[in-house]
Amino acid sequence: MAIKIEMLRCFQAVADHGSLTGAAEVLGRTPSAISMMLRQFEDHVGAPLFESARKSRLTPLGALIRIEAARELTHYAHTIEAIEALSRAQAGNVRLSCTPSVAGSVMPNILRDFIAARPGLRIDLRDTDSGTVQRDLIEGRADIGIATLPPLPGFRRELLFSDAFGVICPAGHPLTARWDSLSWADLASTEFIANGLCTQIHDADFQPILAASRLMVRNTASILSMVRAGAGVTILPELALPPEFRDLAFLPLAGSAVRREVFMVLPSAADMTPAAEALAEAIRSARISPAD
Image 1 (tube, rainbow, N blue to C red):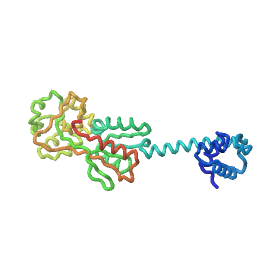
Image 2: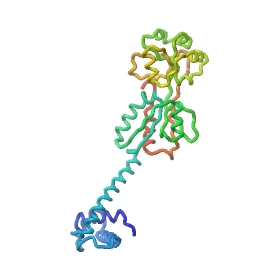
Image 3: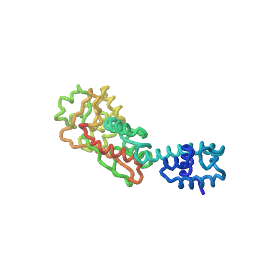
Image 4: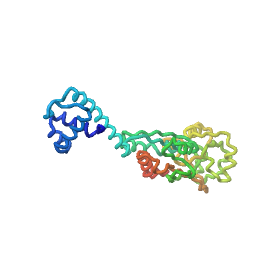
């Protein structure tokens, strides 16, 4: 017969309380049941663990086994706590891959509240372009992806939010005087900084402006720094401009309905850990909008 965890628990209770009756009260068992389990344990060990039937004093072997039993029961309790924490999404790791504009403007408040409620949980946030987000998901490097992504076989896709594209320029730029009627034609004579999101804009009048651009910058923070430095203006979705950039202006384009759609992409529910599902629900419940 193999040694069971209940045998160790029974032995420790008898050793702690010095009697079958005391152990039975603590464990919620009858003294006869405690006696039977203790006898099975001693039979397996092949030697008595107590010096008398009163169980008030351990044999030398019993004293040594008591130390090992206590160590194993402590380890077992920690293991159970860890398993339960994982199942309740209170522990574990979640890998999140998303575009820089989402990482900088949307995720801070969500992750702040999420990790505050789950001190045993670890988040690995990677901010990168949409193409890399897609590869992270497909190659198993991300549990959750947030970006402008097409449907992917084997993955769930949920629309999180949509925001309009507009011109980003310094607050004192001449374009700001005409923001209510700004069109593509107004950008024809302005130095334009291209970025990776420009491929989502299919308006025919925008294509010559994009083709004439002499500077391509892919990182959102770098793009905004270039605009601040006066290197040109660019086109970005509204949520890509953080509120703290008060020296930059977002100018909607009159007559253009082009918008960015940002999706949360997830593996099948069977492939998600409880922690990842909990974070996905927190993101889903945030009700993200440009007004946030």
